[in-house]
Length: 309
Image (tube, rainbow, N blue to C red):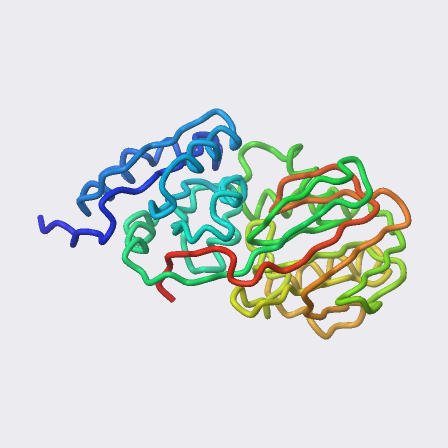
């Protein structure tokens, strides 16, 4: 058996989310450990009971030490404060439920050798999103994201995913929750400002602000997004009823919805979204209560990603 070539890094920090993917990350750890050792890598294994504890440990490590995030989009998001503006390299090993940011990069769950190989990739500077809840259940709370956020229908879907049968995962789980949400659909009025100008004002089922291209385990909500262009992409639906919204989501699955009637889409750098009533919000798939207003700005090239293009 021929060993893999040694990595240029002597030591890495491995943040393992034991709960990611319903325990998949924990079950795959022995195989991932073998891949790291085959490359002659020493590592600090960080396996904490909360994202905050894992973040604290990473922040106390030298910024030159790469972080290998083992889990899903939520695992990566919990580590963002240790990555933004620091130059600390990030490698993603997707073993979560949705893996949407990793999926956009072409990474596949279970392909551990390919994921670890990105430790030898040249660094890429990718954008991030700085989000502030300016009115809502968590007024004043800030978060930094890599992938994106959604309000309205898709956040309600994320909430309903917690009710989905445990046997379902990924796209199937999202689809089940989407059908439940369609039955309970309510429209609210939203006003969206992009770079200080009104982009959309009216009844809407959903608004998404995306750095990445996909959410919900594979729905191509923003197929034209580019994480290195210094912009976000905003999508707002018009006043769609359940049947038309279902057709829209089927089109979103294939990424062929842009330009259709009732779909409003534009790039920008500074976004304000204000609803006329409390509306559910998710940040990279994690629910953050109901909001009336959020503001989003782009952080160009804020995160150093190790990934072969």
